[in-house]
Image (cartoon, rainbow, N blue to C red):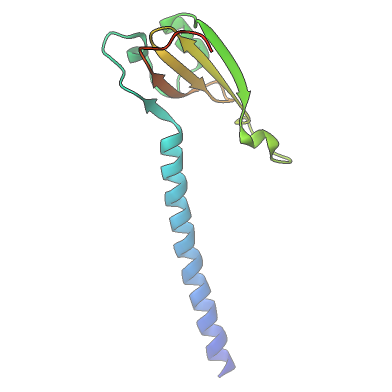
Length: 122
């Protein structure tokens, strides 16, 4: 009797753990999709139409020129104890009449915020 009970509990826990891990993987994938990408509509002929997510800062500035203003800020990961990853700092390049470009700690383009009404200052 006890053996059947423990066997049933073990099987249920195994099923639950695989189902939960699949759901968490799906959630993480969706979360990563929303955190990086393009926000707004990039018009044809604009500077930002030449860019692709994942480009380095050097590639971006060589391709579309220097920014009007920039800022650097920390993310929430900077406050995690013993976190030594690169994603604790973000950099934002601001281009007048184009929008903003956000780079991760690995100096790769994460997000393009297209905004033609951008004044070029933070």
